[in-house]
Image 1 (cartoon, rainbow, N blue to C red):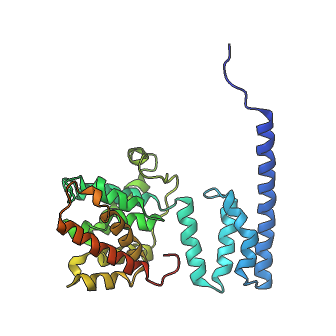
Image 2 (image 1 turned 90 degrees about the horizontal axis):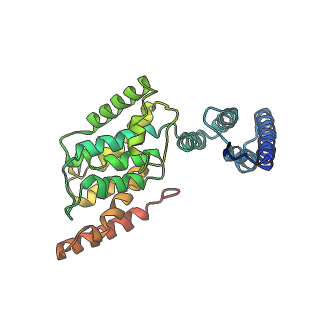
Length: 280
């Protein structure tokens, strides 16, 4: 007896209607983008009222993605900064750069092997993993996992970048090897089906943030925080770092010194939270 359950016809019909709606919306948006270009439309809010719908059913390397990238190319003709932010968002949403999150986590776990936090817990599990996972995009996650590497190990930032590039090349040359994903699937949400290499600007952005987060490069704690405040990525990661450090439950028997450090963390966190960056 065949116990295989038959997929209800109503579900097939429903999915068929959804596919038809999506195809119709895609054709509309493709026509609209051509119109935006022809008329020189610059009202982004107006254009978004139509184009945002594509994000609801966009798959990597699909026609839908191509139409949206074409839309971004139009925005770049009159607002390059906005276009760049949208490209970054699109890459993050579709997971094209999330492989670097895995590379960063793997490298951090290796570099900090055997280290303990102030409560005697494994440093990677109790701190770096939490800071890395708190990132709101792939850049924050990469820097989050590695924010203490140059500070607490014998490796410098250029070497960190070189190691990440080396791992990226290994995966690019062996796309069929997915064992590295399986090892981290339970703790890292993104699943990178497709890998896009980083640009020089993106590598420099990561390196800059990592250098700013190394307190050994600043003569005082005050100057250290002041330098971090000049860089949005560094600010975001430092706030995630402080959030985890303010979890006093990580220390079984906190002392007066621990509570004093907690008050310093709270003050620094508030100072960073008040930095006037969009979306912080």
